[in-house]
Image (tube, rainbow, N blue to C red; front, side, top):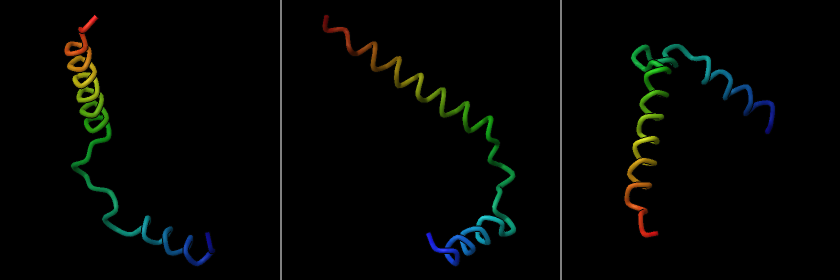
Length: 50
């Protein structure tokens, strides 16, 4: 990656307003974990052909 592109990406990442206050990482991760565990539970319930 060129230095100019890396510099531009760094400036974009550090721009004001990059982080949104309502996006709580613990809530987002917990929600994702819950959805994945629910999908695993549903998959194992429907896979009883043996």
